[in-house]
Image (tube, rainbow, N blue to C red; front, side, top):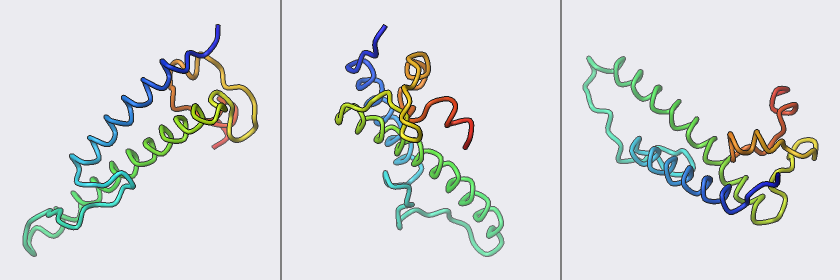
Length: 114
């Protein structure tokens, strides 16, 4: 069995759109920066709640931005013909891993080391 690049590209593009949408809903750009017009509201008495909410949003944004970077890296690998090759060790990434997670840019062994 070989990797279906068209299917992988479609899955990655759909994942990218979903991640960008989620970032926008949280008030962030694709790079993970919060928009300057984002208002967490509240006055001095609510400062603790605002800080907690902002921290939670930042955590979600960072996770989504990292996943978006992985998707973009995988799309780049498709474009340059290296899709399915581990960026860490150069080994072939298993087809089962790519089928389960098309954005994988590392093999299982390298991923488990990080």
